[in-house]
Image 1 (cartoon, rainbow, N blue to C red):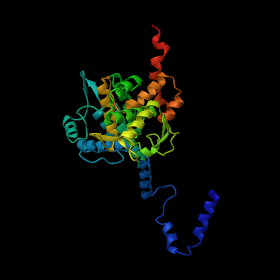
Image 2: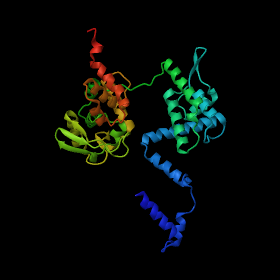
Image 3: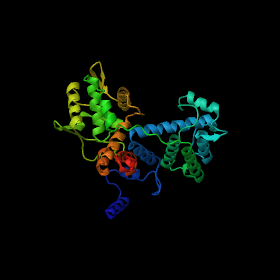
Image 4: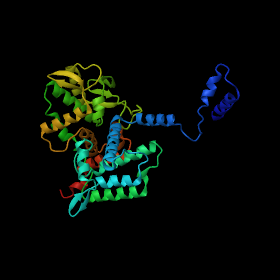
Length: 370
């Protein structure tokens, strides 16, 4: 195949184009080195890479880059330019990383600069950023340098060493990543008990059961779910085709996600009561009338509201349904491969934290004194 392509190219180079001599000239101008990308091709490659990212990921990238630009103007009085010098990245780290001094947590960011960033809406609150936020913003800056093929300051040994020690210091202070409360079976059933027979209650019951039973769907996946992705097999079973997910942007999903039993019954009731026959599966409900599609934020708000009505303590969010599904599966010792086939996790390490937490609920090691 390669030999054929090379031979054809050679023949074209020797033989003028009979129909349009100008066309062959256009193919060879402007001249490019075989080892270099033209500016237009480089920009096109960047656009393809970004287009393949999930929308929520792109939003987080944009937010991080907006903050980098705002901080650079506030700190140095000039826009951020690539490549960013290593001392600037070091300054960013010490400006936002808390350290203990005279018994108090302090940062290097001047108070006036901090206040201006907050007032302008680039920063949520005065003071240090969480380590997870700092790491994310460094990752985004690093990604930008990679795309532009610029010398990457985030790979500099001084930056890597500083951030490594900063992470250790944060851990020693007790700053650890916080996880949302997992909606295992008991709190889920308490939430479902608050769903009455109103149209809103019927929707929330169907939504909670759909998201949980189909493999712990993300809030964005619930909001994006459409009627044409749902196929009824019988009265006790639906199949949901997850066309795209955070970890599967190509559409090559694992087999359809089953929705069985009470989840299927709740779905049937919602579809019958709402008269939703196409478009978004879950909609807003106002005065017993169905409106436009729910947003991912609305899905999370429903979980929080039902948890509050059920008076179950915890830090609840849309992700609670996903983590709850995995944790409950761990309690019941469901094989990890079966769980990942439903959740669409690609890395076992990502799911193992919740899975092991669930296993410990039923572990004999936890009941040695009983």
